[in-house]
Length: 276
Image 1 (cartoon, rainbow, N blue to C red):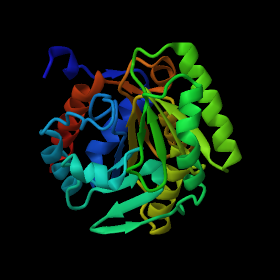
Image 2: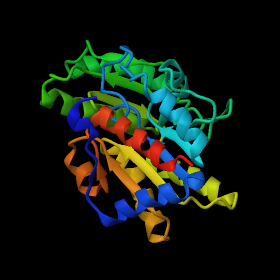
Image 3: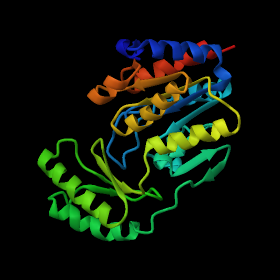
Image 4: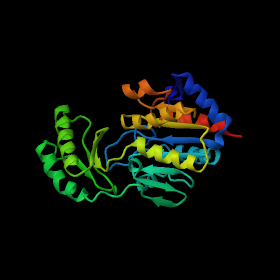
C-alpha cells in the first residue's frame, strides 16, 4: 500500500465513538460499502475494475466477525460475483438496492422497469444528437441502462447529455443518475431508501445494530449518509466514511480515507479491532 493510504482522518467525535462501538460489540456491527471509487478505482465499462485481491479475505473475515458486512452499489450482483468478491455471507444490495443477495438467495425488492425497452430504442438517437455517438451503452444490468463517456469529454456536451437523458427518464417514468463518467437511467431508487429498508429489516428482527458504518465517494452516497444521520439521532452510533476528495462527501464524513487503498487499510484495521 502507498504510505498515505494508511492514514485514517477522523473529523468528528461521533465518528471516533462509533469506531470504539464497533470494537466493543462487533457481533452487531453493520459494515456497508460502496464499490466504484471506494473499493476499486473508477474505470470505463466494459473494462473490469482492478479489484485488490486483499479485499476478498478481509471481507470474509469481517463477515465472520460482524453482524453484517456487505455492499450497497450501483453494480449488479452478477458483476460483484465477477469481481471475485461474492463470498458466503456477504450481503449485496446491487443496482442501488434493486437486488438483495445473501446466502445464495437473490430477491428483487424493486420490479424491473418495462419502459427500458423504450430507452433502448431512444438512446442511440439521444447520443447522436448530443454529439456523443461513440459513448458506450451498457446493458448488462437488469434494471438500468448506463451511458459511459470518456473522462476528457467536453463539459458542455456532458451537461447537454444529462439534460437530454433527464428528459428521456421523465418521459419513461425513470430517473437519471449522473456519476463518474457515467449516466444511468433506471427505476426511481436511491441509496437512502435501500439502506433504510435494509436496516429496518434488521431492526424488525429485534436486532438493533451496535454501529452502522457506510463508506462512499460521491453524491449518491450522501443519500446513505442521510440514513446514518437519522440513526444517530435515534441513538445508534454511526460512522460516515468518505473515500474521495469530493467536497460534499468530505464535508459530511466522520472519517476520511484515501481511495480504495485507504478503504482497504480501514477494513484491515477494523478487522483487527473486532477480533475476539
